[in-house]
Amino acid sequence: MRLRVDGVAVQVDADPEDTLVDVLREDLGSTAVRAGCRNGDCGTCTAMVDGRCVKTCLVLAGRADGARVDTLAGLGTEAEPHPVQEAFMAEYAFQCGFCLPGMILSAVALLEHTPSPTDAEIRDALSGNLCRCTGYVNAVRAVRRATGL
Image (cartoon, rainbow, N blue to C red; front, side, top):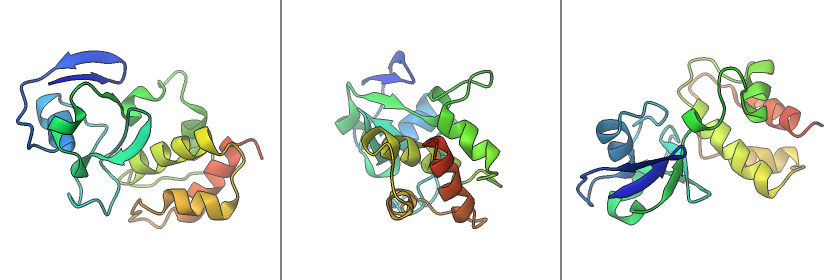
């Protein structure tokens, strides 16, 4: 199968019945997506697939052939973090990092479609991500900060 992962064209020999999270992690060595619950509840495997925020544990690899996949690793750099990453750092909206990929990518997807979301819209956008450290309040503040409000 062919993919464009974080801007890099890759080709991988993968079983079409494997999940995309397994292809990303096991075949391509990406640590930016995590295999958490494997049933779509926790959000640690979140990536953007063709511009849509998805849980890669629920996507069969065969359905992603030819797709553009953007992970947290491709969002920004250490020298130039994405504004949402900067906001999460400024608001201490992370602790263990378990939920970070899903939280940040969900926030980015929200802000691409709704540049000035309400707190309710932010909470709704982040609701598919399980935070073990109860960082939800800080995450909402971080998304609000990323909007410039």
